[in-house]
Amino acid sequence: MVNRREEEPLDSYLLRVLCLVVSERSVSRAALRLKQSQPAVSAALKRLREILDDPLLVREKGGMVPTERALVLYSHAKKALAEIDDMVRAPEVFEPAESRQTFRIGAPDYIAPAFMAGVTAAFQRAAPRARLVIHSLGPQFDFETSLAEGELDVVIGNWPEPPPRMRLSMLMEDEIVCLVSARHPLAARGLTLESYAAATHIVPMPYAVNQRGMIDSVLSSLKISRAESVTVQSFALAPYLLENSDSIFTTTRHVASFYAGLLNLAVLNSPVDFPPMRFYQLWHERHHKSPSHRWLRGILSECGRRLQPVAAGRG
Image (cartoon, rainbow, N blue to C red; front, side):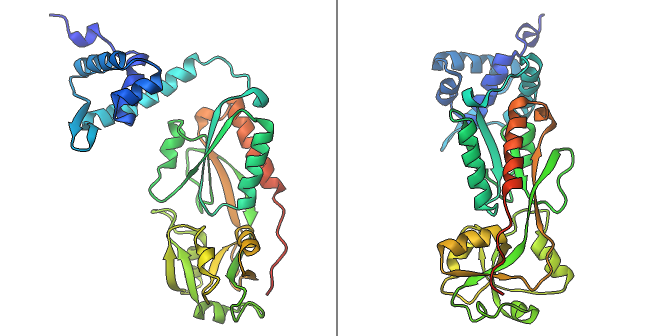
């Protein structure tokens, strides 16, 4: 008796159907992504179910959900497709002015607004037809897997210990300062270690579940304990809470200066001797030699180099 699985081996088309029906959790949406008819994708899903001897998608109250085996197969299929694409892809010739490619950057929301504004402007000037997508990163976001599977091209971060197994280069350094209301009693005379420790603080939630941030690490090593009166999920929200408050927000100078220009806030030098905040760009080996990715990394590096130090604030 002939084994049916030997008669119908998995090909790259079926692998793509598998990935899309699992990620979209819908045959109709997968068909749109593949630019094919729904019956054609339904037929391919039927073949996959027969070959793999698994329903792959099952109906639940809220819609279709992948089976446990489908989720495992999805991860393997994405890696296999990436290897196939790399194998058959012709040597890339990249012309930014003509490109319609989509580039995806992962970045935390505490990155300097002036840096991201410079990146966006340089990107649009050089590649007006291309698309830039900036993904927000959070504690639960698996950026290493996203880089490995091609969902992100570059990730920007300030890891105390950059993740291994990835390529990286430093983009820029930024000074740590304190942001307060312009009406704060200390705005005119500056901060001391004593007044810093005695004040209340607005503190962002940890950005990584397995790494303590640089500011917290330094304060802990100096045995300085902050009164964390307000904890916020977004770095971008913290400055807006300061105007009618006597609290302090410890952040980078470029971020502080940006919000001081928008709101009635003052930037004060930190009484704590924090080392500079170092930001890196991180990418996977699979993209290291790609001309389009090298161009994107060059844009990021140049914008990091051009970001000039901001004049010191009061205090």
